[in-house]
Image 1: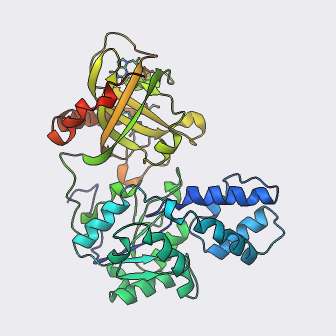
Image 2: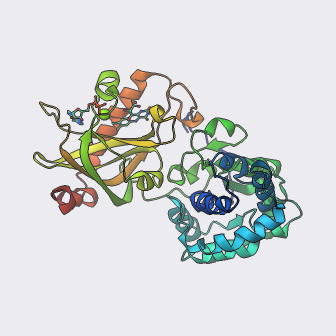
Image 3: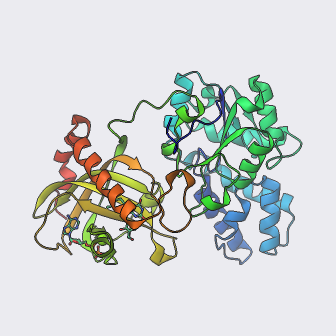
Length: 391
Ligand code: ADP
Ligand code: RBF
Ligand code: MG
């Protein structure tokens, strides 16, 4: 047992939150609210998102009605907005790693409960759009089935009761602060997966904070480990991004000694928002130079106030010149690790104090990517026509 990853308390069951934990509800919610507020001549500025994540529908509605000084009650707001939401329910995407997690626990017969502040009926509708989900949960509880929603522990305690286990044998997975508070108040183990960026320092009450479901290690809690990691990498459904190499901020080579060929993120912001920050790898095609192995980071860009992600690919080849302006195509095939933060907002499990340490870690990523890309599972994408297609 390593000191960095001590075994936590052992559990038998997993209790999951839905919105923001398994489903990417936030962006749909922002869109709906944006449209709704226009009716009242108001503009949604996104700032409420942090306030309403994880609250009950009534609390969220009250916050919005008050902050935007709307001439309606919270109840009226809910009844006007619910039909606007229901149109979108089947457009809500599963978050990265959600399907994998559900399949893993159900195939290992780890009982799972779904405990959400949303009304039971809405939960059922939302999960019915995702094949295999409903059957995987032994228990489903909505906010309308308990007296008080999260942060009250009631919903989790009720879930444990219906699972027929002690609260202390339950692992809660939650994206929101009220959810973490509720889980701890229920004396459960809690893994937080914050849905909003740059928030992990607020989650001190959680037993662990991870960046996305891809980083969950069930074995830390005495549950069967995921079996899909291969030589330090997690295979992903490949995704594709390309464009001319642009000027970055000159930090790659200068600060780290690691050049990263930046791509304009115009047109890719949705794609990037769907991928957690972290280190990925794959193949890179340069229109006139060929196809190369590549390891890259997706990170929050400090120059844009952390509102935008950038993508920083390091081509694993020695070039004797720069190639700004050239067409670069990437096929991203796997994931290595979450982003480490130097200086601020450190994920406690990923303690990482120095620049030298970061540089060493990135060289380790390079080795992992270089080796893994020779595995047939990844090497086959070297011939993907996308890498060689002309503009
Ligand atoms: P910038 O901040 O402008 O991206 P970097 O210091 O990160 O500057 O250097 C990146 C540039 O270096 C790339 O745009 C490319 O032209 C060049 N370069 C040279 N070798 C490599 C490599 N192996 N991987 C990525 N970029 C490289
Ligand atoms: N920067 C970080 O701050 N944390 C990281 O964990 C991190 N990992 C990286 C992994 C790879 C493979 C590469 C190429 C770069 C990484 N960077 C990381 C550097 C990041 O992309 C960016 O260039 C620097 O943060 C400088 O702004
Ligand atoms: Mg760069």
